[in-house]
Image (cartoon, rainbow, N blue to C red; front, side):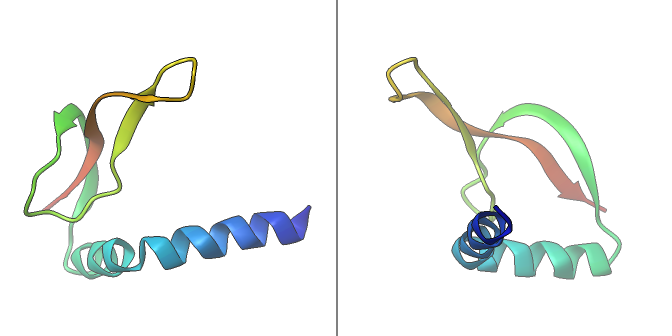
Length: 71
């Protein structure tokens, strides 16, 4: 079980490396996470978007964010 969790974590970090690096830099500069509610993606910002999925597993609606780093 531990191996599965480590594998999933490693895949997440590898897939989102750029986002995590930029988020760490912004946090080091004083930014904090703020709940902004459901918002459309900012094309100029790195993000890990969310998207609803219907019962058959197909994506529905547009991708969105709920949290944003702000100073």
